[in-house]
Amino acid sequence: MLYETVTRDSVHHLVHEFYAIVLKDDVLGPYFTNSLGSDLENGKWHEHLHTLDDFWLLMMIGKPGYKGDPFPPHAFLGPIYKETFEQWLKLFKETTTKYFIPSIADKFYKKADIIAEQFIENLGLNDDDDDD
Ligand code: HEM
Image (tube, rainbow, N blue to C red; front, side, top):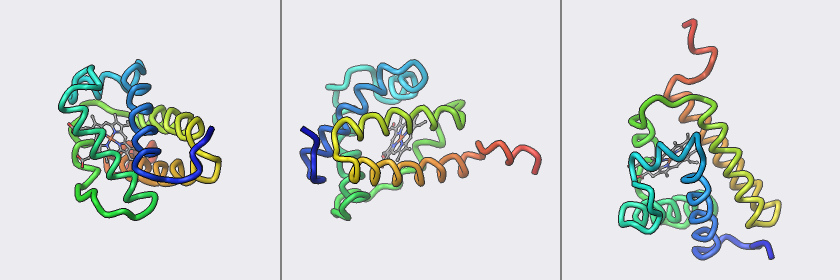
């Protein structure tokens, strides 16, 4: 059964599953193990997952809670490429589609795509930035 509404439970389910997949991914896994360790049940991960639940509840239904600034941690992840973000988006799309009805999965993806583009821009990872 696909979720038809965005609630704390459905978002948490998505977030938990997404990071379990990310952690096992050859490209993305190392960025997360470096910052948060490899055990999704540890304290740092617990905090990260909670932050991400709040973040997506704000993005998707405007629920107050997330008060952070999503970009800064991404400026200190070591060498990172446009392809790294594309891999993140690919896995995010697969996971949202697995859990939510298409209209909601689409909305998750569109929001993520806009934010990922901003990160790529802020990090100067666009191909056409090279010649400036
Ligand atoms: C290449 C892709 C990405 C990588 C490797 C990555 C990695 C990380 C890592 C390691 C952290 C935790 C930093 C820490 O607490 O030590 C983090 C935090 C976070 N990420 Fe990403 N991320 C990626 C893309 C994205 C995208 C596309 C979004 C949004 C759609 C996003 C949203 C967030 C948010 C909201 C936080 C928490 C920020 C806070 O502490 O307030 N990330 N990310």
